Length: 140
Image (cartoon, rainbow, N blue to C red; front, side, top):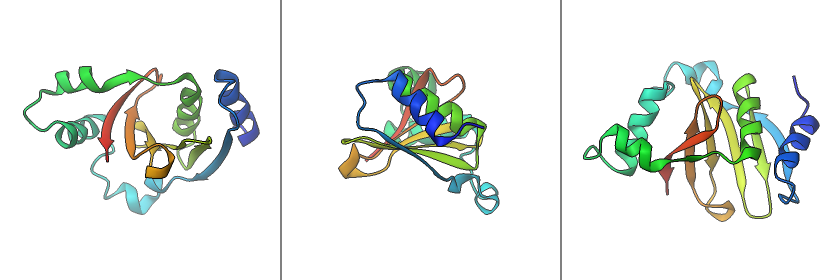
C-alpha cells in the first residue's frame, strides 16, 4: 500500500504547476458496513441513472447524457482514483489554493467530489477503471 507521501508525490508529478498542494487520507464513510446495506447507488448503472435524472431529467436518453456530460479525468486525479479504488476504506483529500477534492470508492466506481462552494463549487463526478474519463452527476 502506498503511503500518503508517495501518493502526494505521484499526484504532484502529474501536474507540477499544482502547487501548493496538500494530500491527506480520510475515512471513507461510503464503505462503512452500515452504509453499504442502505446505499442504492453503489452500482454504475444506478449511479448513471441518478445523475441523468438529476441533471437533465428523464427526457434525455442515457446514451445522450453520457456523451454530453463525460469529460477527461485530469491526470493528477487519476492517481487519487487508483488509490481510492484499491483502498476502499480510505478517501483521498486534495487541497489546492482554489479547490478541495474528495476522491473515494463507492461500490463499483470512484466518486470525485468538490463538496464545498468556497473550494470550487459543489460538483460530483463518477468514474470507472482505468479512470481516463469522468461523468458529471451533480452540480449545485
